[in-house]
Length: 113
Length: 114
Image (cartoon, rainbow over all chains, first blue to last red; front, side):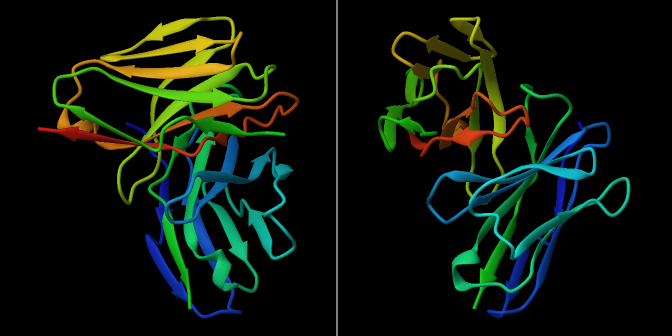
C-alpha cells in the first residue's frame, strides 16, 4: 500500500536554530500539505502546495516557515528560527484530487529546547 | 468562523458494544467530511468519508451519518474491539477553499474496556 514517509521521526533543536522536516508524498499525488499537532490538541492546517507553489496557508504559517519541493519526490518544511512554541508533531499529507482521502505520514516530533 | 468540534472528549465502551462518536461542524456549505483515527504517536489514519450529497455511508464495521439540517456528523463503530481504542477526529473540507485542506475537530478519545 502506498504511504507518505517522513524523516526524521524525532528532531530536537535549540531555540533559534533552523530545522528542515522532510516528506516523501505518494508518488502520483498532486496536492501536498503540512499540518501541526501540539501535544493533546487537534491537528491544525499549516500550508497547502500545488503545482510548485503555495496554494493556501494559515495564520500559523508566518515568515519563519517555508516549503519546497526540491525534486520530483521530496516535500520539505523549513522553520528558519525555531521558537519554543514550535514544539509539536508535524504531519505531511498528500492527495490525488481535491475532496478525496488525504494520506498522512507518521509525523516528525519537533522538540525545541 | 471555521471550526469543527466534537461533543465529548472521551467515550468509554465495553468490548463488543457499538460506539457512536459525534461531531458538530459550523460551515453549512462544506461538502466533504472525513473521519480519522489516530493511535498514540502515529499519524491520522483514514476511516471513512462522506460527501454532502449523501446522508449515510457504510464501510467495514463503520457507518458515517451526515445531518446537514443540524450540521452534525457521527461515526458509528459496530462491535467495538480493543484495537479501536484511539483518538477519533472529524474533519471537513471548508467551503470557498479549493486547495483540499482539512479543518479538524478537537478529537474524541475512545476507550474500549475488555
